[in-house]
Structure formats: C-alpha cells, structure tokens
Length: 468
Image 1 (cartoon, rainbow, N blue to C red):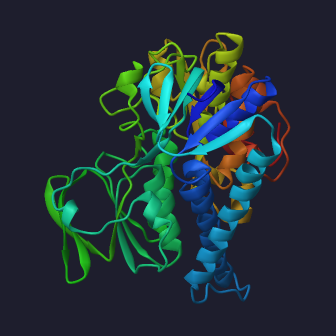
Image 2: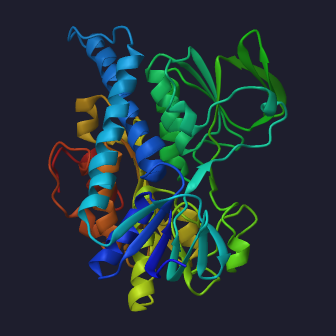
C-alpha cells in the first residue's frame, strides 16, 4: 500500500495540470496518473496542432488575396512535410515548457505512468500498485466519437486525431459532421488545396451556435469553395477504386460522395469506460459522461470530475481548467464554489472566427427573461472593409426591462479576440447602453460590439464613422 496522497488526479491534460497547480498553491500535493502522452488532447492532438495548421493555412489564403490586389504574392506549391515539421515543433516546444518543465519545477506535483482503475470509492490500482486518496479528481478527457455507420469497419478513415497526424495531404476529403471540429479542419484542408465536402445530419451547421453567425460562416465557407450539405443522413460507406464512397440521403434524396479520405468529426466521447467507475460509485449518463453537481463532485463523496469527461461540459480546454480549479477549491476548503458557464467565452477558429458568451436567445427566454435582440452584419463595421472580411454577424441578446446584456454571439475577423470584451460585459452586468457609450478604437473589429449596441436605439445607416 503506497502512502496516501492528498489529491489523486486521473489524467495529465490541461484540466489535470490546472487542478494540480491550484492544489500546490493551496499547500496540497498531487499525484497525476497518465496512461498515454503527458499533456492530454489539447497540446498533443487538439488545440495546439490544429490551430497551428489553421493559422498556417490562413497565410496561404492571404497570399491568394494579396495576388488579387496586385501585391505580387502567390500561394505557390505546398510543401506539407515542412508544414508538418513546423506543427510538430510547436507541439514539442509547448509540451516541454508548459508541462514537462512545470512538472519538474513545481514542488508537490508527481506523475505516474500507467492505467488507473478504481477498485473502490477511494482506491485506485495501477498495475500491481494500489493508491488511496481522501480526494480524487477524474480528468480523463475524451476521444473522437466514431458513429455506427454500416461498412465503416471495412475501410480506413480519419478522426480529428489521426487527421492531424497525416504525413501527406490528400486531394479530397468527405467530412461527416458539421460542428466545430468538422468546420475548423474542413476549412484548413480546403485552404491547403484539398477539395472538401461537409455532410451535416441536422438542418444547419453549428447547431449549438446562434443561427445568424452560423449562417454567416456557412456563406463564407461556401464562397471559398467548400461544399456543405445539411439534412444529410449517412447510410453506408465503402471503398471503390482507391476512393472512399459515402452513400447518403440529402433531404431524402439519394446521393453518393467520393473522396480520397473520409473524416469523421461528430463529437467527443468520454474516456470513462475502462476505469472502474461502477466500483467507485460514480454514476454516468447513457453516453458514459460522468454526472457532477455544480461544484464538480460526482455521486461518490470523495471523487470529483472535470473537463471533457463530465455531463454538460463545454469541452474546451479553458473550461476544463476552470472546472478542475473549482473542484480543488471545493475539495480543500469546502467553499461550495460553483461554476457559471454563462460568463465563460468560447471560440471556433474558422475564418471568420465564431465566438460566443452568455445566453442564446432561446435559452434566455426559457430562463424567464423578456428578451430583446439585435444583429448587425460584419459589413456594417468600417474595419471589415479595410480587411476585406465582409462576411459575418454580431448578435446581442439583452433583457428588455433592464437592458442588461445576457449574451453576445458573433462571426467576425478575429472574433476570438473580440469576444473577451463581451465576456467582461456579461460578467459585470453591463447594459446595452453602457456598451453603446463605450469609446472603441477606430477602425477596429471590436468596434462592432459598440455598433451592435447602438443599433438597439439608433439607425446605423444615419451614423457617420466615430459618431456617438
């Protein structure tokens, strides 16, 4: 029996590290258990490699635009091996500086490699070793979900993980899914010269995003040459003459799609199936996600969970990290702290970038608010004409009685940066009038927030630049 650790953490990704560092700051020791690569999904085959390639693909797109403007630039021939080496270098550098070095420099953090399995409500087995802990955090993360498609077991296919490990760029890809990962990777491949077809089961792309910014993104993607089909049911897949064949029904009509590669991008499944949760008394939902309360405690009193493995999570690294920190605060101090997901911004790194914070319109109505909304096109923003990024939208959801901003949803150039100001507005209870009266840099994309707020009470077509 190994000596008791104050906090045992299953996993070593961004959620686990954030929790361990919080524990260290509060004077507690942590033991992280990792069966795979240190750093989890985000650093190894998620946020960092994907955003590195997405940003590189933007360079290629800008070269094409520059050529049209007479700047003498051109996209040129793609040297994918160099691009892949650059991506791997970024991953290795951040894995070293943000995980390995932190593990070495911060006292009270220990890493153990192996498969963690619960054998009781406070006991974990790793090989022939047994650990007991007063506090345990499950931060096991998730992995790409593979849907049950007839014929899939007989062909090769890509997931969001393996797509980022390709050593050669394909000529064409059929993407099953129309959510965040499908569109981020789809546009990236398209800008690298790949013919991309998106197949979305629902009536529109990004079903969890407000319709106005989602529609603006679709128009931008299609303008770049991507094909997007909604109301599409994938019936079966096969391989034919070296190509992947997808038989589907689009709005009830049969269609066949051929491409060199098939990418499945239909969400994330929780990595919870083989860690013995039933022996620990930890309940999961029908898909395997761990049930937690507002303080991230599971149905087992000594066990908390955070990140991609929990029910209802936003499945982004920053939220997982915040949940891990909250769980540790509740473990150690018993503060009864809760997380407010409505004040946390998130972004989708397409171009234009989609970003959001707070309530969606329908959510606000269901929460009992008398809602008033306004949406402006990105073309309303003077800076959009400077950059040429005219496709996009900004939507503000507000309480009609008080003017308090309940949510902001946008699709704009650099939207991931702009949304941070909106998050402050939501968190600190600003009103539409407060935002409308805030002076912004001109010209800037961020000025779009002010313009959208002004549009609640002014006709923007009758305002000059910088008008109050």
